[in-house]
Image 1: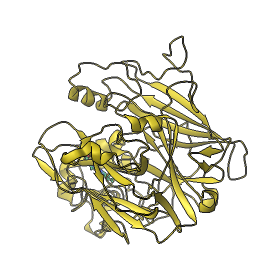
Image 2: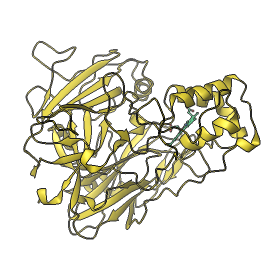
Image 3: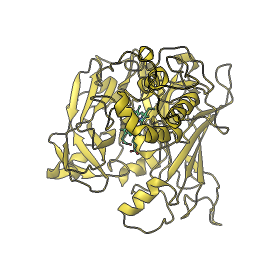
Length: 485
Ligand code: HEC
């Protein structure tokens, strides 16, 4: 499809959000005191012999209940002793495998990120161990007096939103079917260029809405594709020319609130395309997902932009595919062989002076993210700067996602003041390394093969379909509006 061709042409400047979870964060109140970078300790230290009231209930409040409580987006609450007891072994297992809480960004020996993450969802190793120990000890209740007072969570909407735009009619998702990734074009009615300082997705039916990506459609092509049905299937992207990414949302990602006096631009008369990943339930369900915006008065001093970069097809583009395993004699090729358990494709770009008409210098990254499909297991984004300074080292790893999960795509925001945020400028080299597990050990590959009624993995190339792959880095940059136009 054409859209990804435009993304594939290397670098697209995009309006995105992701950004700063100013409003909802505050999961944990204590001082950081942890062995793991970017993770905040629970409100109290874990007990040597953990009890429900003295340790587990505190961990659940800090790490789980923002989703797993009444009205939360998770399918069941983890609040009362009775609720937790029945699911405790599964919960301990999901914590140990780091599937829960859902969070993909971890440091490992190949990538140490220089900043903490905003709104970090992760449990600490001590908490994971305590949970397992509590289960093994027979789930003791403990002293009533140790139990934390119940915590309430802020409503999930975007604070001070000005617009709620959504699907015109409910969409029906049949029981028990395949996952469906579907695009809904909507007209926000912006006659002039518009800047927004906050965005959020309000899923209509959290039982089936797995994740949502919002694009702008400057040429209003989505409505034509959707026709009378009002929507169309669109696995890899919105399939229109020059789409700009506006927001990537997964359950539990708080509303995106940009820093003071910072906005992202939605060009006049653009439509928006809301791409929803539906995960069918046991019964037929309907959904009417909404997209919330906070429109600014006039133009801000700082402009946020999203740069999507990657998907290099060969060694000759602006973004170059570097030599890798399984290349043919003719040179680098994006190909993930069938049954390769840890195949990596690497691509590199030297940031040009000008991208999409925008001069590049003096941008700061507020967030980064990764986009791959089902075989993707880890993406690393690294920068090598032309000029190093005290705050901006010559080499820096910007993101590593060894727990990447297609279902939980989001961007990760750095917790640092503007001047310390990773800087990016013309002449800097950025490298994207995407690792894939194209075997049936990968549960996502198993599921995708079953849905496509395919018996075994096949070679994977670059593309938009379920069994194709991508390697796109999401770079959310801010810069002075005066530098742009
Ligand atoms: C950001 C929201 C969020 C947070 C935080 C979260 N969960 Fe979940 N959890 C979900 C959702 C949504 C599901 C439903 C399954 C899915 O969509 O992947 C789920 C599913 C589960 C499951 C069932 C998995 C299965 O395979 O059946 C368990 C167990 C679980 N969570 C435990 C936890 C525990 C324990 C914590 C905290 C340590 C936690 N979760 C934190 C959103 C969350």
